[in-house]
Amino acid sequence: MISHQLTPVHVYELPDRLFVHSMVRTEAGFLLAVEPALCLPLQASDQELGAAAQTLLKSPLRTVPTPARTEYPAVTRPVLEAGGLKSWRTLERKARLCELVPQDDRLFVFPTANGGSRGDGAGFHALDAQRLDLALDTPAVDLGRAIRLALAESNGPGRAA
Image (cartoon, rainbow, N blue to C red; front, side, top):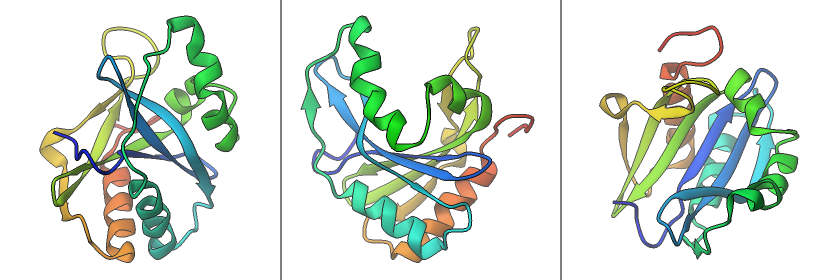
């Protein structure tokens, strides 16, 4: 169960940067990528990475109308642009993902398996057995370190989990 007060956050590691964005819940119950979103250099310190994630986590979790399939490109375009991306396929081909999920007074940090963009295993899938369990008020430097650990455990292009 996701915290009703805080928003989940996704952190992608691309070959040249880190891309961090917020999520909202749709009326249909699934999560959708939204702004705020930001990029950090790969060399960002654990403190900087953790502080960026904490800033986005503190956004209240919103519920939005469920977009029609034809509306997705327009709804998610600002998030992609903030990440310097043209499509989600770039993330599927080039990135590793770590999911931050607030729950009550805990923050779960999930590594993921990248199933690519086609087939039964397409998309990113949380590796539940490898999740990290942190206090919601974990210091930024420790959160940044946990994010990097989860990204290291995630699989991505050319890398098995």
